[in-house]
Length: 273
Image (tube, rainbow, N blue to C red; front, top):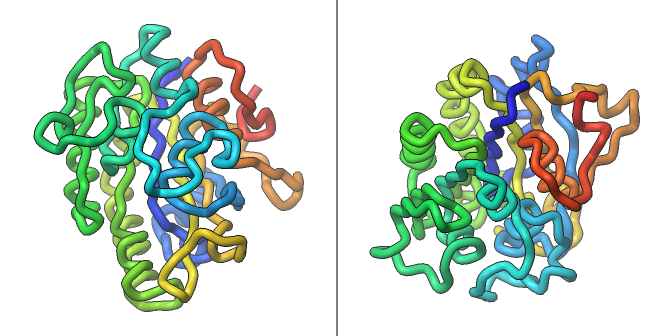
């Protein structure tokens, strides 16, 4: 059984834009290699609160990480801490807020940008603090971590879709094209990840609106994609089976895939028996 997982969080990616614009991932769906579910983000639909939600299974109003300006370590067990405590290798190529939640806060770029420390929750990290840091470079960072350290759990978290959304809005050529660009980048890596034994989840923290922002309850702000790739997923039809997956289920589902002991909620419907 393959117990390695890659989680890709395409920051700021709206569900409908993912559905309409990401041709490679939709091609995998047509060839029955991928299943797409619609996921509703927790509230507020903001980045740092939802990183904490995805990676701990705790909703923002319960975690206390309720806005982007709260700079402190998480108070809860995360997928990183659980994996590290149980002898697994962790890695992340991600925005620096992830480092602040699970390794050290506040972020110090000289100290933290490149992290290799077996005692940290995220043992191997390539972190960045520029919203315009190129997605292509971020995926190269991630692939370096994967090939070099063979992590059991790898988080990949690019920011360009969100950055473009804040500049041009949901209903813009630029925003849609940023999703297409991410789709092309993913097409260069997914077969290699699958062949190396990884189960893959591709999702987002939140969507985007036409006010060049997010944070509220509009469907365009809350509805995000959840693509799953690998034989450890059930691949049940989300419409025929009326499958509803919660964002708070993602951490526990990752734990299940990694065969970790945990007490997190997870989606039995998402996973193969």
